[in-house]
Amino acid sequence: MQIEYKDNYEIRNHTSFKIGGEVERVYFPKNKEELVFLLTELDDYVLLGNCSNILFSSNGYKGNLILTTQMKNWKIEGTQVTADCGVKGPLLSKKVCEASLSGFEFMIGFPGSIGGEIYMNASCHGQAISDKLIRCSLFDKDTKTVIYKEKQEMEFEYRKSILQGGKYILLDAEFVLEKDNQADIEARINKNLSFRKDKQPNLVIPNAGSVFKNPENNSAGRLLDSIGAKNFEINGAKVWEKHANFVVNNNNATSEDVLELMVKMFTAVKNNYKIELAPEIIFIGDKTEKEENLCKILYQKMQK
Image (cartoon, rainbow, N blue to C red; front, side, top):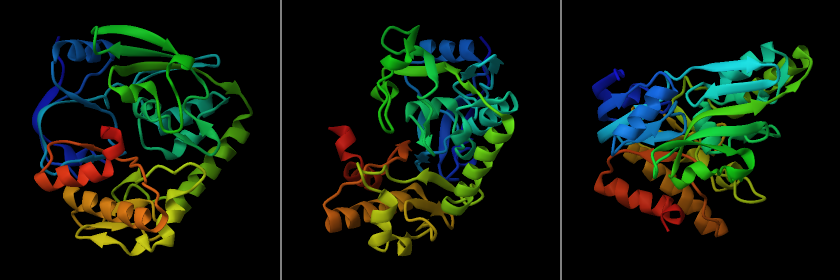
């Protein structure tokens, strides 16, 4: 099977952070069949979508990377919507709106793909990707077969799904949305866009979304703001001046700069409130020794 690939690919051109080194080989499957072929044939790989919540190592990655950005197939049949893992959330939000379907208004402000949003059970404005999900098509890495799981089998929680266990990879997903007045759907979409404009940095400013998850019954942004995190800056990485739970690539930041800044934010909240914030940003790639130590601090709970 002939699948597009590129060697020595500069991944920074693909990440929303505009950070990342050279990847040895990157594959670009165009459909479910090509992706399954790669997952079956390759023994070692990293799979990513739109890289909107990823911090990729400036050191790069000596291995195989699969990007699902060319997997753009989707269809609407009545109230049922099916989408490949690589379909971008904002695009699907607009398309279902045009079909007078409600349930994806929240996705208009998320730059991620369907695969990434299901992986982390993305949610905002009272809606979550899991709300309207019916069934997922998954690749089982242990048996190297395609299986299907219903919504109740996906183990959804706040920012969690069964996909984070590493055994399964999302191929595509089926949803059932609700019929609604198109003007009302558009109004909610515009309200969500306005909220994002006021509360989150535009992707013209390189960033990877929220840095930390909200602790139970609390707000990571509020905690960080209260300890003066908006003044934190390390080399090219800076906490955004309008919201303390965002880090922006202010001036050619490296992955090491961002990790060091994240540890500074994490430590300040821990020292002041005895709360250990859990990162929402995922680190990928070959670590330097310093990055290894910084990641041990940030991702300690996930590594236990």
